[in-house]
Length: 303
Image (cartoon, rainbow, N blue to C red; front, side, top):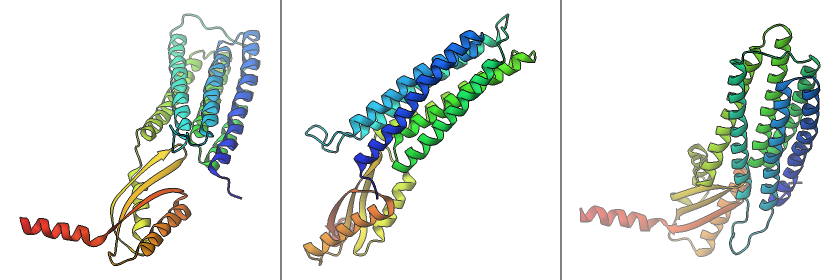
């Protein structure tokens, strides 16, 4: 059975809670093990997970707000709270990524390097495996319910798996007299985190400023143009509202059609958009086709 939009958002809360639980558990393990085994990389990774709890909490709050029904101030609902949550997550990821880069550069030029216990590498690898599992779970759930906030959270999960992997590489490298391997791995991981943060930031701001993919808009136009009774499309606009798409279209039909027949064409457009593109909010404005033709003829005659 297909879930409605509010049930889908409710499902997304499960992913946020999985992330928060994983971060709370792993940050505690990493901090204790890091101090016990004298691993600075593991300690830094533990504090990184503490900041990730804030990002996951922001996603959870955004999902909760999105479930509020439409009101006087928000006639379209509160679905964009999801996009704002994703935007906040991108800021937190960027902050973590920059911190990792700064820490890596400092470690690279440090005069002395402490060799941590090899057991700390196994802790880091265990944490990386756990976060990889959380990433897979959240990504599948986000794609199934088409939730951008949870998808952003899943990318944060992947970044944390990479950070833990980088920490493990550095710890293992230190055992073989390669202390520089840790900061080099951290530099690569920090760059990946910053790149992911930028991608989430770009997509979130693009949606919040009513940007829409041109290719997808062209696909919507093609579907409407193929609807029986539609002569031409005068104008079409679309925007993202949370995990939903809102479409406004002006179509031109035969001026001899009755109101009932024109209304049937509008219903058919809405039906086709929902069936083919899973778009449930379509506003169709119908105009007689000859009006445009007469306007063009009059303009030509005046010239």
